[in-house]
Image 1: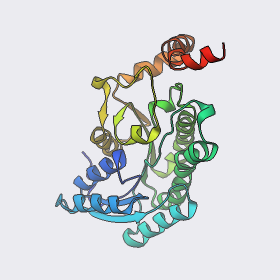
Image 2: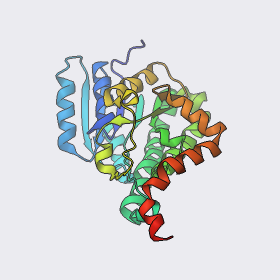
Image 3: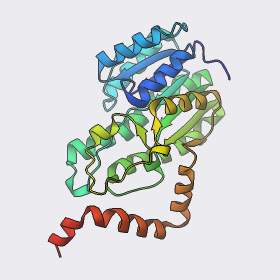
Image 4: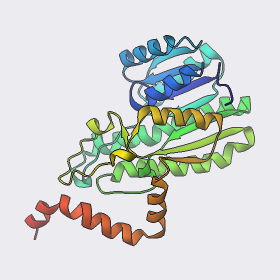
Length: 276
């Protein structure tokens, strides 16, 4: 595997879940890891854990709200001030609020979700890009989701944000390749993280990711590092979800029918009866 020793890596949303796991994996590779998120105390803990690996990795902790341009600019400026370059950007910061669209709060659930999941990715990339163009090298890893390929009920805004990241990344990849910059998308299926605790999931059907397909944050963190070492345009993990994406693309009417009959109607049964 190509060495990542000494490479300067920014990981957003590094205080928990996939971001934390990715930061640790880069630390194991001896990289210089910039940890950016809102929870400073959690970032400090992750930084200490990376230092304890004794791999020669360095860390820089920066408290930042990735929905704010000034915070994003601060992260980039502090990184350049300390390390002088940026080799890898992992756009991981994001969250989901899962409910029927009419139940979502216009500001807290809709606007805030789009600000972090879409604007945060775009603006962070925009700030880092001139540095990578000047270097004529770099890797940008954008954390997507199967929701960026398949839209399912209660995921309207989250799916919209991840579809936006998909389109943004595809266009960007074709813009920056001549400068030696690689843009990669990673599409994890269900991951055992704090995501579900904050998403407000309420399901009568108890529908969830089967255990044999459920990933750990470390699974995804290792995949992120591999994407830097061996870039590719997109990576769906685990690979079985590729079949679902193909089915959704080739037979959308079938997916509509099974999803509506198997999920939407049972979940909204009481409401449907009330409005009958």
